[in-house]
Amino acid sequence: MAKSTPADIVVWYDNSGGTPIDISQYCQSIGGVDIENLVEETHTFGDSWEENTPVGIGKLGTIEIQGLYDDAAAGPNALFGAQMPTNPNTATRTLTLEWGNNVNTVFETILVKYSRTPDRSALTKFSASLQPTGSVTENP
Image (cartoon, rainbow, N blue to C red; front, side):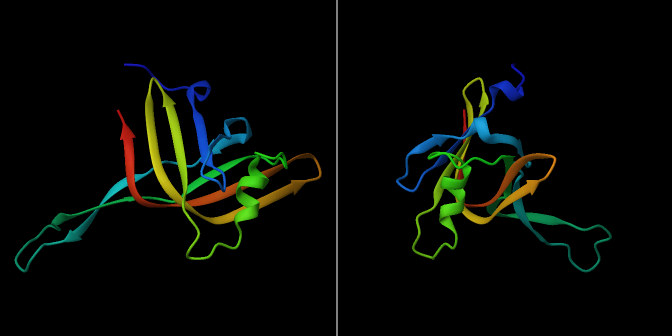
């Protein structure tokens, strides 16, 4: 069993033409990848403890990506900044996270927020909030 290190992580995000772009060189942090089951409370009268039953629907929480702002042709500003605002007919974009050792998490996303944060004593940073939609593929 291999452990994943920051050097193993590769981040791919589709451009407007659907071509995956390696944006790893711009990323400094990725919020947690929280995959969860939706459940319904199913306890009844007479029960003294809460009971839950899965409803067969999974959910992936919003993904936050943060890093160094760059206005390069395939940089974060071109990929994220040009998307706002998004209309309902806009295609989703695929985010692929490679964890190393051929393990990937792949899902479609909708950009819900893009921020640029200037700082007089540091490099400008960017952050993007991506809302997953649809199924999540985990390999292997």
